[in-house]
Length: 490
Image 1 (cartoon, helix red, strand yellow):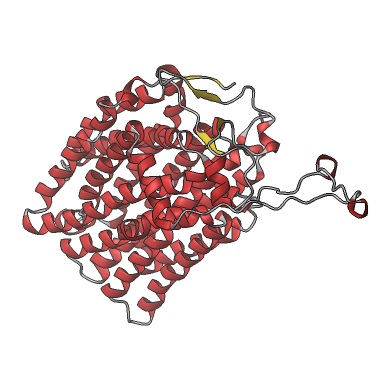
Image 2 (cartoon, helix red, strand yellow; image 1 turned 30 degrees about the horizontal axis):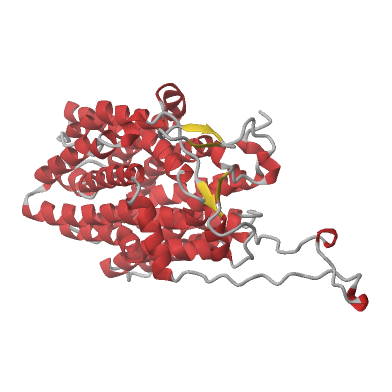
């Protein structure tokens, strides 16, 4: 194992294994929940669309304030509670089915509430990562996590289809509940997160001036921290929105990812109805089709690092979109026989691009964001990206009822084929190296409530990895240069 390997960090190993369990449960549920609605409860296109909408609606309802709340909370606690809530909600589905009382209304409630828990888990896990590994290793860390998610897509969705076939869909959801419970138990071993660290306000006695009075000459004067006003919730949300939407590169990343999610959801929402009702295919065939997407994401996550080393992060995102995104037009060709394989090839190529986007895009936006804004930046992206999923689900159900399955699938494929344009037309197309995030001590101390350690307005560019890992870095973190590239920090 290399001296600077991520796997030497116990907290990263803990987060990684907990994420593995969460991904397994999430992907089994991704297949099982809509099949419960379609097979056990007789849901049609509109009802399937509503179910998919509710599963992501929480990102629109609480996505933005969740970022500000997570910035104020202990990340470890947020992750554990979110997993426990999801485990309890998913466990209610097989229990109600066993008692003969499962309804679409309960399934809608489970989808909405688990979506709310997912908001906090996703924002918290992405916010905690830079502090665990250091910004200089974010591409490696995100590559490992995205690769894990891709394996979860393959194994989880493939297993989900098989479990539905063997156990029925309601019982397959019990596996989802157990996976989230296991993730929560694993996260109890997470020893430290950035939100749990309180900056030390004490000053060593040797460095503190003593009082002149003889009775107190040997007693150090303990400085009283100057109270710093904490911005209100609305002001913090607005700061996160300005940070994302006011930066042309972050704005382009958000637009491309949102369009990609919109197109994917237009397609994915109707696939259970298409496979089960129109094509009369078994549940495992749907799981296998979705698993092909997981293979694409895995390949994309593995290719992202070597390709970006050659062409640069931004150029890789632009070129991958130009070369791979048009394959989205192959996805609607799902009519059985050889055409099903052609559609699967299109889905594989689109997912390959998504895997590269997830590694490089997430790493870029984490590098562009200072610590005190990470929760709000991630929440803003989650609000936009999962808001697109909610809108796509609603549109898919509505258009499926009005225009038919095939027309809606072609609309989704067209959106997938053109989603890369915001990044391709942005300054990201010429970016070779990632920027380093400025760390504002004034703002971060205002949020933490600690006494300021530097004059107000002072900003520096510095790595934020823990001391136990930062010592292994070969060079200082790069700082922004005048032309948008990076130069060594001074």
